[in-house]
Image (cartoon, rainbow, N blue to C red; front, side, top):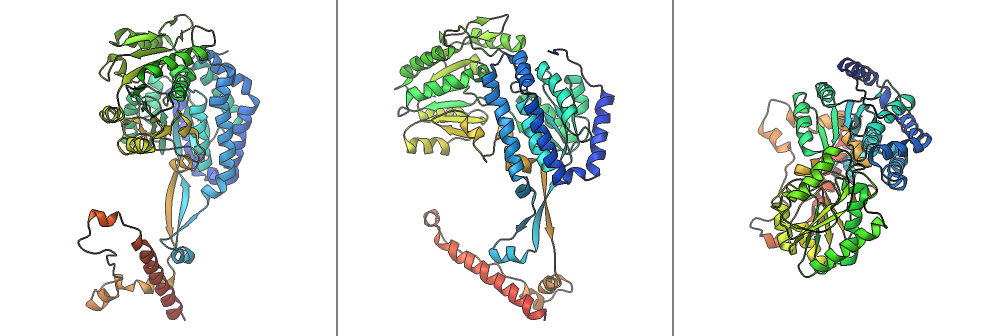
Length: 508
């Protein structure tokens, strides 16, 4: 297994970028046949090298093959097929108009243009998935791409460098191995879009570098994603789900449950069942199989445990050499505790006693989280939480599932990121929606009032927009809304019928 970091020089990075810029200018990547070919090549990259990829993830994170297959390989395969099945529909021109008649006239359409040469920067916690999944979207959109995997996951980085060169078009897709100095140089180059997955601190540096070239960015960050457990919750299911979240990749996932707010009525039962499920998932082992990624993060996690003013009721030990950690449960703490001073990103679960209202208030004092998990059997309580919080996504009575639901956008809000991907949303992230308007002769006559000289007679020809509501309406009137919608649509249809009549009458 190749575990040596070998970074590209600034000159090599510049050369790669120039090659990709030249390739994009040829227009070859706009061809749907090229896009489909590259997606299929990416499929064979994964298919032919499944065991090598699993071995590389094992070397970097000591993650089991089954877990890596579920979290990385299965998702990549599913995404490739999904994009191949839908690329023709997503890339097709879209006829637009505010009514059926406007769309039938076909005056305007949206053409989906690839943005150009894009940069994809992945993260170490899912070192294969988080570079290939955005790449799938970029290829589908017709972009050229430089991908930079995390230098922390050395084995995956080095394997992907060899495979990308072997399977994908090297004039359009390049992988760059880079540390901080090389990445800084990379960010000095002009890109048409930057897609970053990682921490908010690094994201700020990337956003600042992108701003110099006015480059749009997609930021998939993290945040302290909480769970709220109400008194009506199925506590057994909540405990099992949250224990699972902390075991998945040893809690090193942006979507994991960072901490838990639990109603006092079910607090003690929840803590007891959480410890039970931790024990069950360990299955006789002392620690979680997946390792903490490196010594720096290992020391950070034990530093947080050492500083907490809460009570560690179970776990918290580990093997310093293998960096495998026993899941910890911490109680008797609040949001000001040092343990909650940052995103934990490890198998430590702080449990905070709070009712639903208190939980929402404390969540709203911080940055919007990437995910929110609600455990409740009370539909009005669930609605109240949704109405009084904001987050990238929500799963109710489970964890993480919203991020993998077919056709759903995935992304953060505020401090947890901006922009979306997955399915059509990833395609759009790497596309420019270009409006094309075709104006026939009759349309020019129809809007001839726009030409000088202006007169009262011409003003009379300007279509008048009138309010479809009454003066003095109250907020209660808006809650009885709906009755005006049919009338509005009929009025729009009548206006367009008038345009069509004008066209047929005056074009004779």
